[in-house]
Image 1 (spheres, helix red, strand yellow):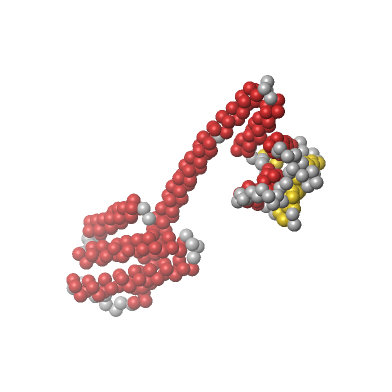
Image 2: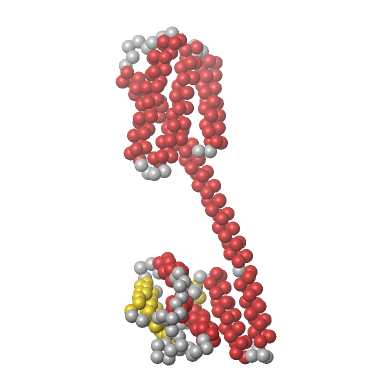
Amino acid sequence: MHQKVYKAIWIIWLLSTAYLLVGAITFGRASAVGVVLIAQSQLVLLVNILISTRYIFPKFWKRGKWLWLLASIVILNLACVMLRYAIEEILLVQWLDFPKTENLNLLFYTYENFYYTLPGFFIALIIFLTVRSFEIETRNTELQSKIQEAELHMLRSQVNPHFLYNILNYIYAEALPISDKIAHTVLKLAATMRYTLAQTENRLMLLQDEVQFLQEYIDLQAVQSENGFYCVFKKEGGLDTIYFPTCMLLPFVENAFKHGVANDASTPITIDLRVSPKALRMKVENKINSVLKDDSSGIGLHNVRRRLAILFPDRHTLQVKEEGDWYYTELEISF
């Protein structure tokens, strides 16, 4: 609870108490006894409001425990009635010789004071909801500020990749007269970087762009291989009419090159992509490289699982399994 709210409660209580006392003295010609009774009833009301706003509503309203909330209101209200009775009929009578109420009907007294104490809960509820609304608005403002800060950070982080992409284009232009192979390797690297940058700018791109990106990645892997390179990339179906999340298929291909054998003609890495208007099916097979193991933590596969769960809930199946010396990945997405 904010300190400003407590101050507001005190100010409202003081103003209402002053209003009642001035009205009772000026217009009602209230006696000293009446003034004291008004003051003590206002004190009980203040206790009611403070306990309700500080404990009851935050504890039970926020958690949706309505029966506990109702029970707490009834118990606190009865406690306030008992407190008023103790002050009016016992303490003030004994200490200040106030007149004791004759023939007091305790049941009617409880009912009457219970009824007149209830407005304190409505005041407390208004205060609680006002504070809660203020807290939610403050939290939303802070969250929006953090989102904007994250977006600015992302935009700043894009400066270096864009700069590197421009440098690669420059290196391509300089390398072209010297070595056609080096120049085209740089060109393919620049193309893959351009597509990677597009991932942060566009959530969806044509599937043919994704496939072209995979082909550029495979070609770059081939350039690095000095002992032969054997990879079969099969593509079937219309790729130019389907929009697809960017860089969704790369982790499966990347995983095959990390852990597979690509320099044996008898066990090539096989990538089979089949697309129809209703579904996408992708199978990746590779023989496990027992000599050069990659001990990476598999973050790429973990992230793609999360993306699939978010983008295609209940519309995809992914199987990753190891059988003997072979590693298999099968993905199916329903459109």
